[in-house]
Image 1 (cartoon, rainbow over the protein chains, first blue to last red):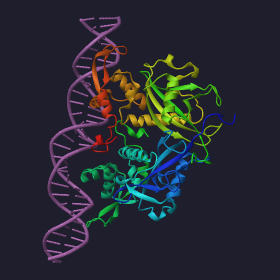
Image 2 (cartoon, rainbow over the protein chains, first blue to last red):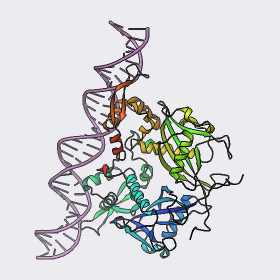
Image 3 (tube, chains in turn red, green, blue, orange):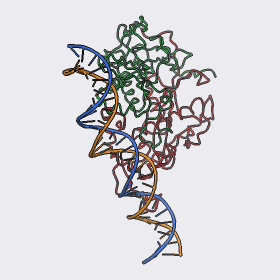
Image 4 (spheres, rainbow over the protein chains, first blue to last red):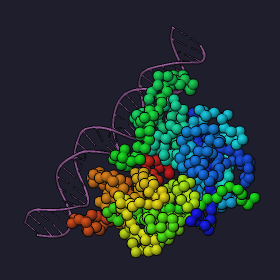
Length: 235
Length: 235
DNA sequence: TGTGATTATTGTCAGTTTGACATTTAATAA
DNA sequence: TTATTAAATGTCAAACTGACAATAATCACA
């Protein structure tokens, strides 16, 4: 037996919702499609899954094709499967979302061939297929996860200030936080190490830089639950 | 243009990790495979995605084929895609997990043709392919979600007691809770409505039945986060 | 040199929640 | 009537939360 014979095969693609933070705003990276269908319209970056690669592999490949980057935070979001979601031919899409620091990976790195651009989340243009839905779901999942895990640090440079971090959280949740309570909460996580130097662009006084304590970050990444008495037993 | 031409198509299946609670223990429903490959071995219930159905549709169909049941809690878990996960032919699998009350849907309802059996989570036999990994991930996700959302009620009958509920939580988290703190926490959710009658099988005194307040349950299902000050804005 | 403007940093306090722990109550059986 | 069993309720100190205000560092400019 070398195949399942008469069962119908299916095209499978991956799509990457790439979030970036530029120090001010949370943004999403879109490309202008250079091929049919919907040529010239905006979409998230994607590609067909090749015979010898896993979905994760395909998503990683797509991500590096567009940004030239390795080692980006990447997480499976959802498998989209409406039979008619692609008008040409049935294609399922496994969506992933990625988090990166826009400034660190500069714009010129983006491959020109894809005509990629960063869009504010409030100004996402009309997208092809179900990509709008994908982005909505990715935003929702980002909020969900960030409420429980210190995931948003993936969007920041190595050194960052508390006010910058707060801006990021406020962008993700589209709300304002009390800065006193915010810094208390963040610092109580014991994940940040205060640096000796200051960021002086955005204020006269300057704000101290912090770095992630990588050891604690990796150890505590999965431990922010609150229902269970001993969350460190969970993942 | 009516197809993407030379791109390689792929077999796609769905697999359902079906969790059940019998009042004592958390269990998972497995079937004895009646076909090759791995005929005679245990696996979770699955099936190939048909041309005109979505993944959710396929999972729902598979679930009802096995249990005869509609309206079961069903949630997408993860898309498994290792190219060699099925030795016969490359097949991706979109895994779902389902929650149901074992007693309510009685054993005889299970279709005989599948030789289905409930297994304690501590006694899951060797499984085909990556199904062991699927179950591990499903357990993990169940713990994760149940820590934040009142999802475990899907495993209980309409009427249940606080001690029964605690048994369920203890089963899911493989730990013990203080019963005083547990009931205080559960009741503080304001999701339960005390009934007039008691369950008297398991104790002399008997324990009052409770029912879910469906209205509050649906309204609060998505609101257990704790990082954000106003979680009711989130989903 | 001093002063005002701006933003970072630190602090207070009352109300709530948490975790650890003990007592009372209802029903049954002997 | 009493012993037994498990349910239900109660206490308290510590930790945490949300609302709110005062101080400190730096720069621009008079």
